[in-house]
Amino acid sequence: NAGVTQTPKFRVLKTGQSMTLLCAQDMNHEYMYWYRQDPGMGLRLIHYSVGEGTTAKGEVPDGYNVSRLKKQNFLLGLESAAPSQTSVYFCASRRIEQGFTEAFFGQGTRLTVV
Amino acid sequence: GIQVEQSPPDLILQEGANSTLRCNFSDSVNNLQWFHQNPWGQLINLFYIPSGTKQNGRLSATTVATERYSLLYISSSQTTDSGVYFCAVHLWGGSEKLVFGKGTKLTVNP
Image 1 (cartoon, rainbow over the protein chains, first blue to last red):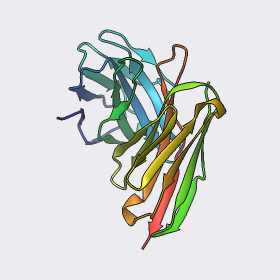
Image 2 (image 1 turned 180 degrees about the horizontal axis):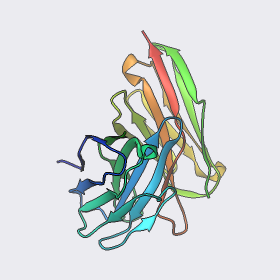
Image 3 (image 1 turned 30 degrees about the horizontal axis):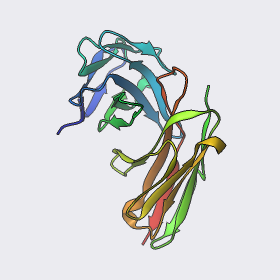
Image 4 (image 1 turned 180 degrees about the vertical axis):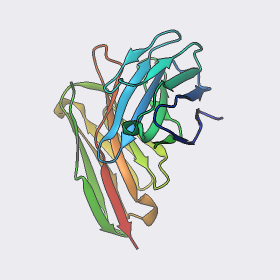
């Protein structure tokens, strides 16, 4: 029972490089989210998706793109990484079933941009 | 947008002490969760509690939705309880965002 799995767990990028973070969930959840966590800021929502083929902006979307081509996967892309994107990234998924909406999180990806 | 405020921001306890963490929110919600982020960074689900009271071992939580607050109680604290505790809420009325507070950092000393 894997739950929510993020790949990779750690990454170091040079400024201007691009990369994609993968989030995979095996719980058949409709909703998926990408958050970033910075010291003293809590978790802030970057983008989210309410179903396959749909995406929406969150609180801090600039510099990121996302895609949800398959229900179980939610990809977060950085086209041109900047040091300000150094952070810990968390993916989450949530089901909608008779009002029950508990969210589950992946283990996080620690990204450093130098 | 909705404001989620947690208090206190920092809490230091001796092992065996009890504590209460508070989460206030500014609008009606239909989902409230408490998470524990351990020293390794993992976010652990503690409670899904949009209303009422739940208990799990030494931890319990109460949400009073009409008064827009939730409390997390930790009894007989242990060093393994150290970490950051977050509450997160989801709004009624269409928005699908899960909004987090900034957390309470708990340190339990032996």
